[in-house]
Length: 125
Image (cartoon, rainbow, N blue to C red; front, side, top):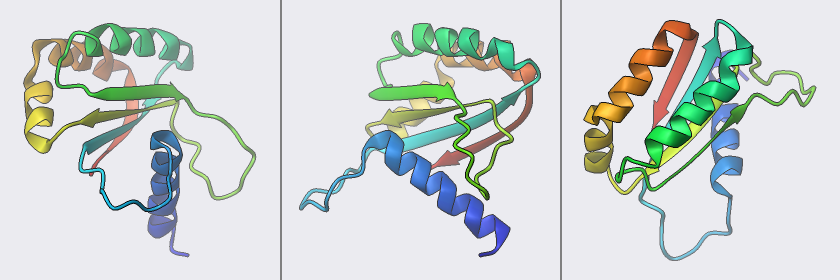
């Protein structure tokens, strides 16, 4: 499998695990998902970044649900290992995401932490 396709496959699998895969139902989940993978310049900062997200997201009404955690090394080959932590945030719609994206607490969070990001990848679906 081509590396780029392999990365997409693993990201999709991670999202499936994070949101809870279920048997097909008659109602499709139409929430917007916002996946962010980040490599921090100091991995020891991850718990503080997650705590800051928890504090901010609790005050942003457009955030329906979210989860975050540090990368888990499962020892599997072909699984990306470059990131320190990942977060998956869910919104009712792309419009709700746009409001969140412009929210002062989200902007504060990004301003504080982006300086510590060596690399990031963001996927919206």
